[in-house]
Length: 161
Image (tube, rainbow, N blue to C red; front, side, top):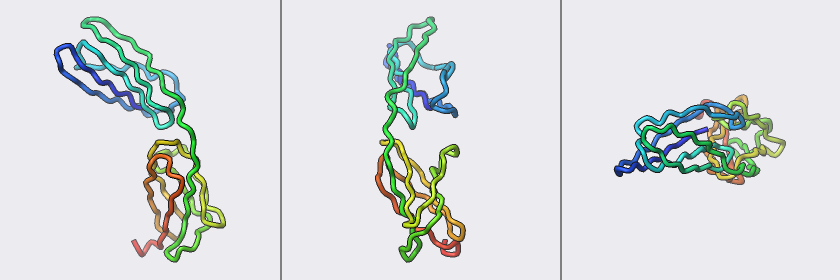
């Protein structure tokens, strides 16, 4: 979860701060964010996450007044299916290749079937780095722009890298 603070102070100075929290989106309560250097004026508090639409709350900060804000996430992003086809150099399907989301260790990897196809459920509008592995081949990394329905991974023996 990321928290962004955009401030436009009374004296015309703008500031932007970002805080990242390494916790599940399902965890309640992000705690306190100290926005040092943000003066009085209008502030947008933006809560951003891979699984939800951004939540934006606008508040006005006054000098000497402690401001408390509850920022609420937007709606959950819908899941879309992405079919990853895994083949070798000759275009033959590779059965049993492990396909996983690289940056999310808790995500359950899937395996390619007899046609070399693995089915991933991803959040629409979210970018992912996917890693594809199979014993006897080098790993292949793919970048999937939010909501792509298909991808192709060509695995090569390690000596070809």
